Length: 262
Image 1 (tube, rainbow, N blue to C red):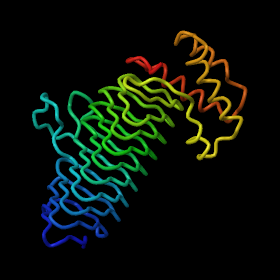
Image 2: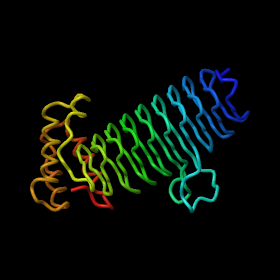
Image 3: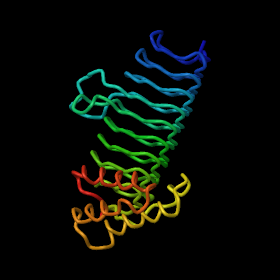
Image 4: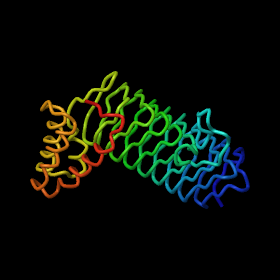
């Protein structure tokens, strides 16, 4: 049996694994499923069609699975899905999706999500991201993997943030931020290539050099976006380990409907 505090209210239809821990005065609704090893703190509300994976640590006062803050929402059974091994700190709010998109808000695995973060409807957040205090994601935002997002930053709806991108403190991001790029400001401006995160993940010096070249082609050569894409594609063959990074960048740029931070 799950370890449920006697003051918690857990609907009989909720599905909790045996090793789940639920803190005092927490409320869990009927359409919630929670996997092995997950710890829920005190005074949390987990509702809606919400699925939470294994070994997550959800701190006190989190609100997960509430209705989307979208006037078009009419009570449809949309979802929130959270993966494994995430740390979700105090006063975070994750809403379910809307039928205008994929009816899904999703958070991946191994994310470190600090206090007061809001993940709005239809956001898709990948794996291994560090999201600092009071970051606010509007609806339909997509975040890749291994990103660093500075505190008190606001992300406009439909914006995408690429893998290994880094966003500085108190940044307003209203256009797509490509992979491996550091940006900051209000509005956001590109600052430099983000090397420290890739370096910590074992990128070789040669591979890091290709990241620098891609950044220069996007931001330092005065090229149009189309010309930059052509020059980035020409980097193929320099280093076999960097082929995946070049493909990552070109795939991201090909879908930059909102434009990119420049």
